[in-house]
Length: 349
Image 1 (cartoon, helix red, strand yellow):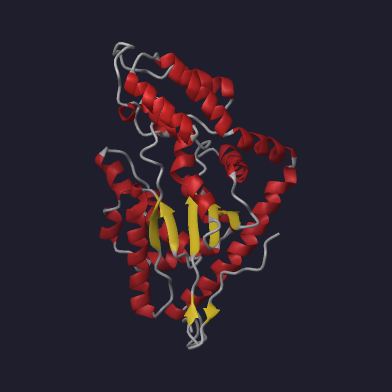
Image 2 (cartoon, rainbow, N blue to C red):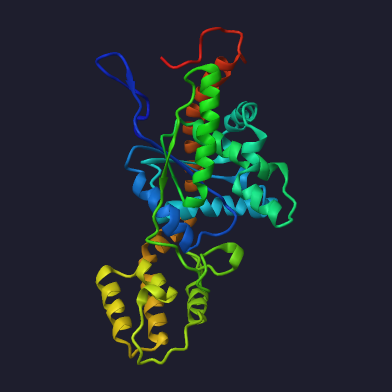
């Protein structure tokens, strides 16, 4: 299914190796993808799949910290895979796989745990925030950044597209990799974060950041009738219709700007600045623009669902490729730290 793997180092005239760009990112299957997921991450995945070797995984192990229904988790994993391909992730260009299909990552997690300071993990915001709110935090949440580090290091990733709230986890990854390399030699590639840009924060239907936890999402593939009702119920301000308004201050306009063509967006901005309009017509324009923007993805999703074996074949193929790379990195790490009776093996040339 895939062309020849171009991710391995290329030799230079001086005998040294140049490691090409490798993109790595994962997305949790904790619910159906919404506009925040698409404009905040998935769109960048699709753009970056031509920037180098790209590995994208569905993070079902991470999802276990919140999803405790096994049937639901299986369904969400499958939906996530279908959605990603429908939205434009090309399995001929990128490796798509399920996190738990690569057991080498969990073994690598233990190696990293042995060099992970407690204080470092205690400062990580997901654990820290939950404790501050008086909620019970399990060991899975506490060690989440270590598993995330293993996810990245297992594939010699050089570029990790993340939102601002995830930059800390990349810093943790670099710290753990650096400590391991200091102790055992040049084992891990140190990745660099690439901040994903969504043209500003993606607002939810209530104006806050779009999030499942706020119940304010517009889902990418939800029934159009349901989406129309959600948009129609968006609260607006009570200023007179005749008053000019700043479009940048209105979350209804911000949503429209995400899905409308540039020329239409400019016309809408001018309408706000002139005034003399009703929010009902803005909502109607948003409903129409959203339906058109995601129309081709919706059609591809219908076609993919009709071919029951296609997604499973993609995930199996992706897992094979991912395991080959993760196994190489894990072997290198194990041999470097002494988990092998063979000496002097495991460090890079």
